[in-house]
Image (tube, rainbow, N blue to C red; front, side, top):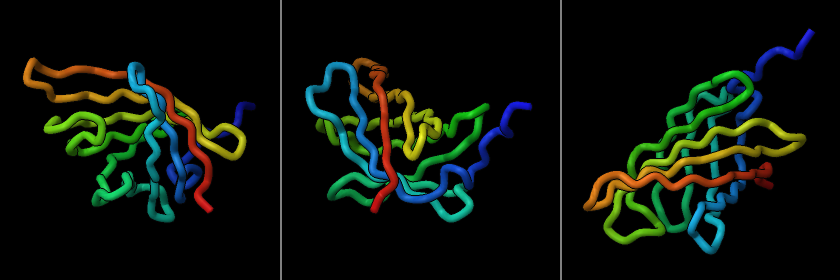
Length: 119
């Protein structure tokens, strides 16, 4: 039989994440952290307060959707990110979408995400 689907606890912990966005030269580094059960998550960006993430499970993926926050890549623009990751060996790998609230409407930027356990 196939293995059982993952639980929130299977993803729980502290992760160092690197995200590569289409059209952005340098990867964006962040930290992801959860409670022991994996049901409460935050994203940490250098020099910023933690950003709440709303978790969900879908198949083998953990889906994390952020609250809106001021972009670190675009001045005076709010952004919301959605990340879908799977466990891959000892890490995380997946896709992400950043939704920017620009003066001309919403703009979607896609990317990839990889993560390793934080020391």
